[in-house]
Length: 102
Image (cartoon, rainbow, N blue to C red):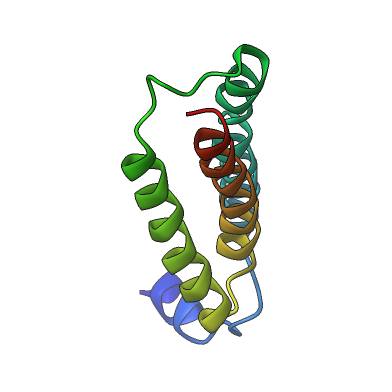
């Protein structure tokens, strides 16, 4: 009961060690996910071929990512903004590469 009352009255800005650790994991995952797309982008550029990739799929990923970025900005959620800004840039480059090397 004491823990519940303590958490209920905790200021909105105060974070526990667990929350900070989870935020750190979210940032790591948020950076790794778009970065893991870079090998795909490099393969398209090196081989000068995107014949096996679906433009519709990558444009869909880009649009969905844009929606998440808009949501993150509207909520001022830094983790979402960082993750989806990186994703928009990298997915956008993949879409451009697919169009260029079709």
